[in-house]
Image 1 (cartoon, rainbow, N blue to C red):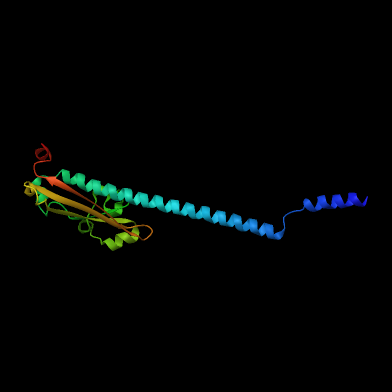
Image 2 (cartoon, rainbow, N blue to C red):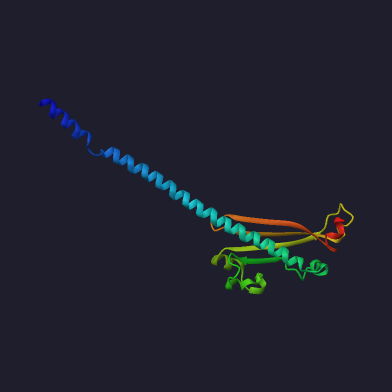
Length: 176
């Protein structure tokens, strides 16, 4: 009978719960995994925000170039007709920035510093220079560079730009 008692005691010991050390190790492992998942989620949200900001900057660049296509050659070469600086908020319909009109600081009467305290602000410049000099038709072309800069929601200074050419008589006269 001594042998049966010994076997039943062994079964009771093998059915026992976790020790305190095993439980603490399990909690630490779960904590590390949870922290990693949290960090991954935070990074994913930050990347999504950066992507939204990049998309808005690209929209502004494209919008400025599309508006320039509507100007005549005389308007394009006149420094008073084409505004050389512009500002816009992250939301193009923001009434604090004048709605969809993409106002300049002069038209709104506010400084960029007061806008940037409220929200994410994109500021941009438009540079219209003479065309390339190494071609015969360079005098009939302008080099246009549009730059947009902003301070990201995470505090990083960001900038995007695009450079293109505008021809006085259209590209069709130069490609044939």
